[in-house]
Length: 343
Image (cartoon, rainbow, N blue to C red; front, side, top):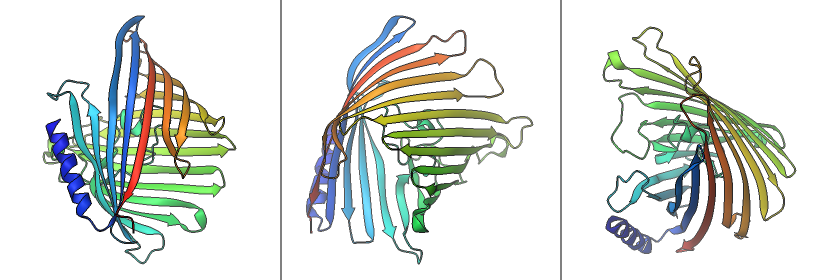
């Protein structure tokens, strides 16, 4: 905790000395978790699952940055004081640097442009499928180029990454880079289609143990009045080029319908089908979530500011030696922000 306080104090001192306009934002997730396995209570806890501290400096009209600290409860007791701290974002956006309209170049610890992970808003308490099933890290050190397709028909992203993520900096960097491409198309109002591809390698220093991953995802989002439906299909093909018949394919199907009742309430559900190896039998994991979000307060832009999320989650396993897991999750999320040195 002393390290956390030192970092916060130093950050505030730096911000206070800046002449640039800077947005300061904090967000906290207070969560109660009640878990049962085979009728037996295995968890009953309250915790601060996440705390985000964000600075967004505006150096000029075309150069903007983002710096995030991620505070979290230490579920595995690996930290002496029971809490963890990570740098989640640290990047600069250079807008209109290249002679391409509505484009930007991003440098630093940045979003991973794969699937919906870079725009996931946690309408369910559960995270993005790409994250929770181990496809990609939500952020990574790299270089990205983004742009918009003319006439509002969509957007595109290109990214080159270390492949280490943000949780273990310097721990797993290969001589090969990770490459990602992401595309969104909006053919008509209310319909968004898209997909992503990423190449990732492991152990590339030793050709005999080299592992290659080809990651793919297809996305469909449909908005009809107060109803929104998000569908995703993810696939990861892992192979060892120097080993015959080494291909292993992982797949995920995720479906998320959301119905907005009014400005205060929204009903939602989610169904995930996770198959870690499509060639193996009895290893599929099915997760069903039903939830309600209650928005107590919104900011001037109508974005959530204070809200309660309730989820009932059931995870079922095909394997005979795995028991079904039931969870009740109740989370209070609150956000506040301020502009410092506003010009």
